[in-house]
Image 1 (cartoon, one colour):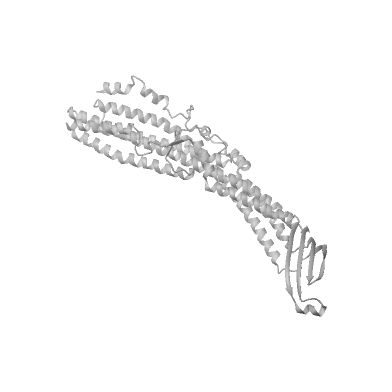
Image 2: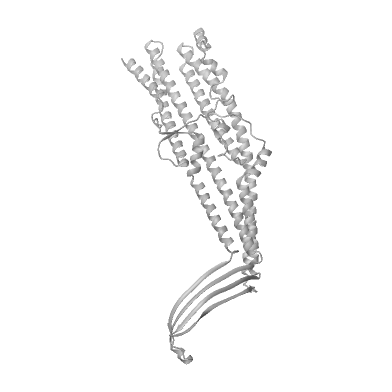
Length: 475
């Protein structure tokens, strides 16, 4: 009776695992692909929205600087009632009503290049803001893709943990069958029970890792409802682009390089603006107005106007201009240093991304064969244990090898996808313009990217494979 209860319990565990993962959003409302996640990131990312507002700031700064070159018109008017008894010496009444209106014109004529340089600096700043937005967009897309691949890895490792638990359940069932048949000891049953109990926390931990990874992805997407993702942790294996081509493409396409180029233009113009601080300035000024003054019946009214050129020359400003020029030149040198540092960082990132792609590529190719071999060993071990030519320890070693190989392969594939994505980002490729799913082969089934087992592994599942025959003959 105890044997039957144990068989039923084992069967329930296997069925529960076969129905899927009960703790990881079995009924998600939305199913998102990689490309859909990237599109949602662009509409939600706080960094992207902040960069878009920076464009508005730059546009406002340009309008402000351009205003200095345009005529400035100001309309003034006043109504005044006053009393002054001293007017009596002029035989005027002490009370008066005064009505005045005036239109002022101010137009700069010559500023030693100050106004024009400020306008050009604002244009450079507008262009720099556009490149800053593009930089924020591509960085947000890269981060989202990385987290998406992490979710795929977490789900793959959860599948490995669940499959391991299923295998432990099968071994427990087989051990109990053999024990009741009198061909196995109680030790074998107890060992199988302990192994199965130890495998259950791994499933719980792996499923929690899936939830954590999805919550991290939720942070980039800005959604609150439950969701699932569609995709497989597979990849289209391609060798990395030569380093020289990576650097050349990056210099042409990276938005950060264009951003710093425009920033250098900004600060070059600001040096000219600062130098004009102690130079002559010529302005055209004019006034047109009408006045009406009423001294209790004595009226003085009429139109008036004036116009002229006004020259101002700050002969000595306490070395203020010199200090401003020093600051402007220092800011220019600082931006130039930052630009050179950026080029060094890009070169380092290019080398790092290229090496990581090459490393992950070699690991994936090697582990695809290793997984096939490990699975074949496990099938041979299980068949041998069934016919008493393999020990329980042999089966456990084979299970460990399969679990380790599958986990390492999943991690290597994730690392390859992350490295390829970073390499595209380093080169300045627009990730939103690419079909990243197709480019990386996520979910595809190409010759080198198929998640299906290689021919050597598929042969194990064909009718009449040799493992059971080998074990049977050995017995």
